[in-house]
Image 1 (spheres, helix red, strand yellow):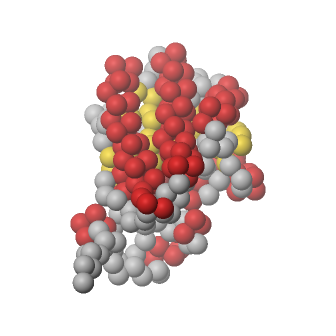
Image 2 (cartoon, rainbow, N blue to C red):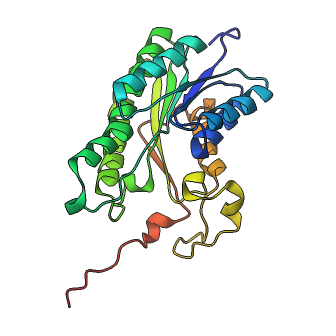
Length: 260
C-alpha cells in the first residue's frame, strides 16, 4: 500500500459492544472506519463521532443481515463511499435460545442467515474488492467459545457458530494466494450492553463459574482483532483465538443427566 492510500476497516454491528470497541481501537491504529448498525441509529452515530474525534474518517450505513443479500448491498455501499476496504470484521450476530426439540425452523434459519449467511455474503464482497485492489487484506470473524463447545438450550446458535468456524478455515485456504488472511476470534462472556454490562463491570462483576472469576472487557477482544490487522500477524491464518477467562477449561454450563 502506498503512503497515499488510506487504510479502511469495516466492522459490522459497530454501534455498541465488541464491534464498537473494535472500530475505536482500529481508528486509533490509523484506519478509516465503516460502521454498520441494525436498529441503534444513535449508537452508530456515537461510534462515528468518536472515530471522527480521533481525526479519522467514519461512514455508516444501516444493515440488517436477516436478509443477507440486502445486507451485502449495504456493505457494498459503504465500501464505495470509503473507496476501498482493507479489513472486514464480521461481528454481527444473533441468537434464539431454544433446545433442539423446541427450535423452530424459522428461528433456525434466522440465526443462520445472520451468523453464517451474512458472514459469507459480506466476506465474499470484501474479499473480491481486496483481490481487485491487489494488496491483500484481513477478514476477522467474531465467533464465540460456542464455536468450540455447545451452549445449552441454544441449538441454532451453537450450530451457526460451529459453521462460521468452518467457513473461516475454508476462506483462509481459498484467499491465502491473494494475501488475504482470515481468522476467527472466539469470545467467552464479555461485559457488553447485550449482557447489561459495560467495560467497567468487567473488573467488578463476579462470575465464580469462570476460572478468571469475571467477564471480559471488550478491549480484551478488540485488541486481538487489532493484532490480527497488524504487520506482525502475517504468518497467521485460519485460526480461532479463544479469549474466555479459562471458560473452555471448565465449561461449567453443563450438568449431568438426572435419570432417577
